[in-house]
Length: 331
Figure 1 (cartoon, rainbow, N blue to C red):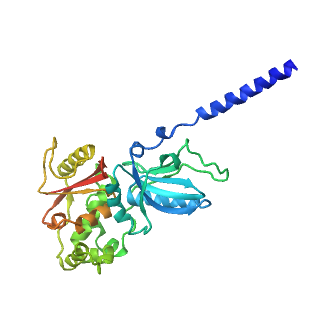
Figure 2 (spheres, one colour; figure 1 turned 45 degrees about the vertical axis):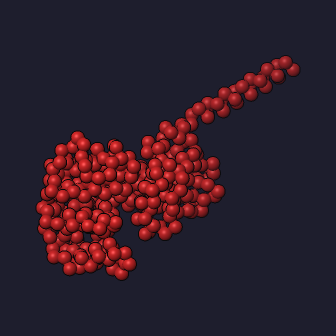
Figure 3 (tube, rainbow, N blue to C red; figure 1 turned 135 degrees about the vertical axis):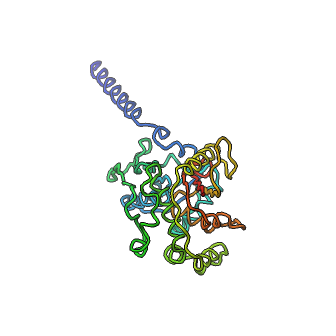
């Protein structure tokens, strides 16, 4: 009898030790989530899918990350997958970004961050492909659901994807002035490309990329469409390394402090015209936002982008308040 009791105690001890070891092997969330996620208070809720549609949700998350250049997170609750995106410290910044996303995802909205429910996330690293990561502290309990770590190459094609064939056939080589500059990221190069399209053939750019603004009731949007319809072609903007360094210094400095504006601290100034944009990281989105120039009565950004400049420096950097900021220095 005494032997049976001893054996039982030993078995229970082994099971307890095994359970503790299993729990200790699970990494806490704060060891695997991106740093910006841990400081986030708000995110943008994009879509919901049923619990048996993980593959579809993964595909949507990857596409969303590439298009909007935002960290995306897959959350599982109440039998549904929820896709949320972005890392915002203040609600107003999330709402600013939401206005662009709602053009595609009509039911998108701002929600509070919920890191404890995340089991997979996608991040876009600068100059590197984005990666999908599973969160060990929040595993999916359903045994039939298996997650994979996948990568997607973000190297820009030649020509860039989703370019209307009319541009490829007629104007593509002339617009892609920054393709050979190895100090620029893929998205920074695309800013030259899209901005040059708007300059070398304003009407065609409006018809192929801004057709949805044709009948807009918003004066900033409709005035841009009308202006591009009658604007004469402008010279292409060519990359300039000194302008890039000027733009990068200001973008980095602004990003670290959360500053918004053109006043510089330790950065030297080298440009004749400057545009700063906050909250957007996709090249086409940045260019269109600067051209629309929503809320700027003087249309200063639009005038600079379509002004008599010959060279351009572009830098997209992280931003403490808006998540990302882009600086364009013209000369």
